[in-house]
Image (cartoon, rainbow, N blue to C red):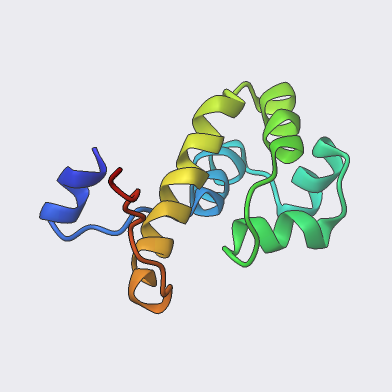
Length: 103
């Protein structure tokens, strides 16, 4: 799927945008109320939904328990976002492919 996204020039969305739009907004919840439901600080949820922080496995489980969205899906979304962002910095990492010596 990421190859398809690359070909059509779309950027993988941050999972925080999904949480904001598809969970909080759909349920009419403010960040404050969402944080209360999840049992986290408002600032923690705010950083996530404003794309300033990554989704942790613990937060993914809290979201699954509170709203029914599978943590596996959320963590795959986070991994896709992280992968795309890291690939954009591949040239900055000076590592060469290892070639085992021939006997």
